[in-house]
Length: 152
Image 1 (cartoon, rainbow, N blue to C red):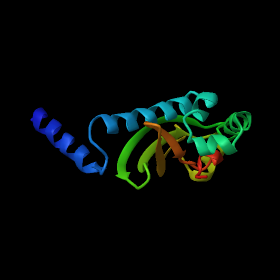
Image 2 (cartoon, helix red, strand yellow):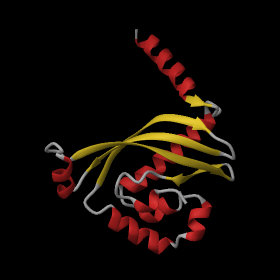
Image 3 (tube, helix red, strand yellow):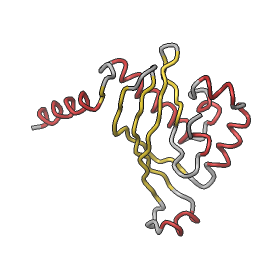
């Protein structure tokens, strides 16, 4: 039974990865996604900045990015994320739908009638771009509060 579940899960992943080379390419994309959001989760904004596409880094100064992300994340805590869907696009860009679980600030809890643990779940489209054989984030999901995560 477990082997059947594993095989069905593998088949499901093949179907989900529409147009992306299954295996190493998909793994590289997943690694980039996990790396970026781990930096966000740990408020390592200088490292998160380096995971953004070169076009973003050219028009956004690193110190401004760090300051703004610190402000935008105040009271919020990224708990976890899960890749729901991956779609291949043109020009080395890929849309990835990700579900995020965050702990919201108390003021948000009151507005949204959240339960005691203050968690809220978001599903958003993100856009990842391949540059020089490496994936970078173009649109990283605003989740109501991360203004610099929108597209450029």
